[in-house]
Length: 607
Image (tube, rainbow, N blue to C red; front, top):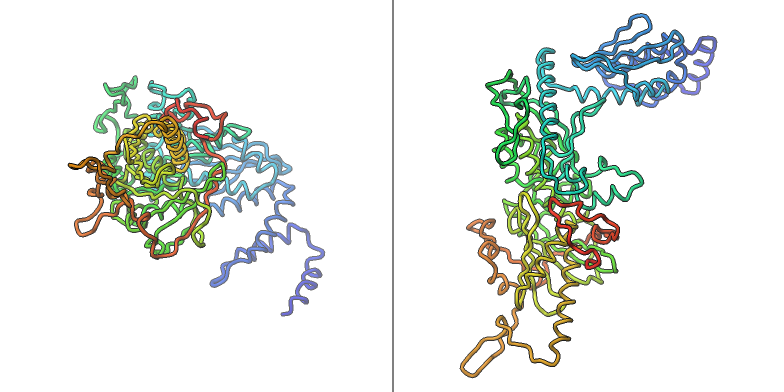
């Protein structure tokens, strides 16, 4: 039938009918089951808008609430002017007036009295039914406890509530404060991070890591809002292939106690009411976190609950980080085999290029995956679990500071310095670069411990400068950025070199033991090394040849590969804008990053 003939016929047919009759007819037509086709989405949206505009009676409002309950898989019934939207673990109570207005909206979790909910009330009074429905979806996610029987769901929900109460008690136990900013200190050093109690459509939330740039981002906004930055986890319940014994009462003694090392004391599960379920507690990470395989193994041993690896996709760790930064899900394995280059723009019109050799990052120990949730079974697992996650976040922050989404293009021009990034182990990285003050290579080794400040060791020709290493440690602990640290280090090297040359211009310099050898006829110059193999030979055994990471049938990859010859494939260069860094903000408060950062690093020296 021609569409032009349909519309006039509809006008004639329904011209004398009321809007309500038309709505009911269209609604019945849209709800009819059709085998191969779905309802026309534009028509559905248009119908919803019309219905929202014409809710002027008690029956119309009840009809709309019933429709929303059906969409969300909830039950619906009413008593006089009160509607009830029910689920297994909660229900909504909507009090209406005889004219269809909304007087109150109450939410009642299982076992608790109904409490008025202002946000839901505002949405219904404004007839914003779409947002109201999405809010209900959030409630359903909050109370989405696995189980086939209502009784099992109720027990699991009760266990989850006891877990949340124990975590709140742990967070209030006395501890040593390391930072004057209590919010940042709680996030980085608190036993359970910064806890936000579950409310409305949000479960119990743990914020456990923020980087210096996150803190600056929050402090530079008009309203100090730390909830919008950093890494958080939501405490929930998930299914498990293994049966676990979960608490049905508090595991903390009354009053709570600390052991000699300052850790909370827990009672054994055998001494409190408990139940066995094919389920466990889950810390759902937002955003999902790239992690090394060894870190996941450590967490599994710590919690005695294996991390499910069904949906995990493994790849070289730097490619995992890059996909997260670019928000890309493409898995081009060809890119994993190519060296990666990234160009970083720094204040003062400086350009750094960071090179990641593919061969060095393809080792099995440096493979990683993106983790969205981590299972555990007791509240005592949470403090240790957060320490491992903070450790991983610190490593990710350092590496991400010199990575960016990959863009095709030739090798960039106008680059001041080139740096090669190699992971010596999962907790140690090396930055190889050519010194800007002399014709010599140098290697900066950064150790990232589980808990505490980062440490740096600088290996270069000449006498070891302990004060220079201490200065570099202060910089990197404060900013958690490799480009900012290398900028400060190179500037310091140039300053030291210029001071030394001016002070010794009238005095002959002493012979350099690395570039001279003594024979029978006196001092004979040795050839200057053309690569960093000579320099690497002076390093401790842990850094000398990647012994811990290289299989027996493979050759070690040295930090000089990029500098001894051109790469065989065209590099792809990515731009990283860094117009603002934690070390460039002269008004940034000192001492906010004390988990890794010391507070005696003068900002002026970093400029």
